[in-house]
Amino acid sequence: MLVVVKPSGANSVQSHVAWLKRRIIQEKIACEWFYTLGEYQQDVLKLRELAQAHRLLVVIGGDGTINVAVNAIIGLNCQLAILPAGTGNDFARQFNRSLSQWRNTVFGENTIEVDVGCVNGRYFLNVMGLGYNAHVVRGIDSHKQKHRFSYVWAGLKAFFSYRAIRVNSPIFDAEQTMMMLLFANGQYFAAGIQCAPSAKPNNGFLTCIQFSATTRLASLCTMFAMLFAKHEKQANVHTVTIQQFEITTPDLAIEADGEMVGVTPAQVSIHPKAVALRL
Image 1 (cartoon, one colour):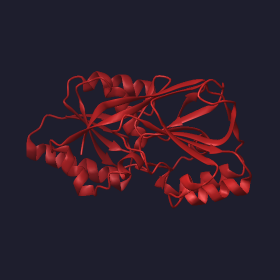
Image 2: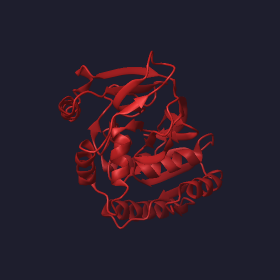
Image 3: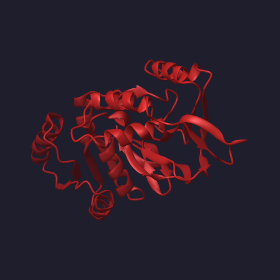
Image 4: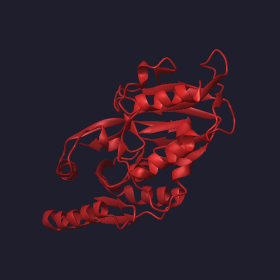
């Protein structure tokens, strides 16, 4: 077993670490620990090197740490287990598991094969997007201490400062002006907002959600509707399922799993059943 931890003094992290160390002793399991450094490329390369000798990778952390883990084990014969301990825990949220149930999965054998999205060679397990959400994530990155209120505060500030994006893609008949463009493998983002109620992480598709840019008032109504997962009924919201998508517009910021990951142009795709998740 290989355990990856994002160093933190948070009670959720320390509680999981203490529990897992006790269980490892009880089960007499060989275990290796890796604490992330916060440098994406370095963390992925080192973790991939270590993971080749292990059957199971346990993540103690949130969506960002899971993202590092997925990019490290993709293509390896290494299962993934999650002990949610992040700010949002959005990917884990859709499975509706309690803390004790997540802990039970670590030493269980039940797995499901989940899909993995990819944008310009970087894999993501939950949600990737352009526009307003990327603007919010960039604002959150400036916070030294992150918590759920960080998303609310960054979202409010971003709403009055973001600019609509214009997106070119061979899939569109013409250039589209949007507030936000999401590609969802999971249902939640931004610490609990159900942005893609119909998304399933094992159906072989990404749910593509286009939020057209209209007036600020219309956008505000859409964001309010999203709080209750009713936004898909809005006239300026369009949802389709896709397996591949190309964005030719340059220099649009991209976020994935709550992390800034690059800029467009971009090739987006889904890799079906790419990771075995203990559940």
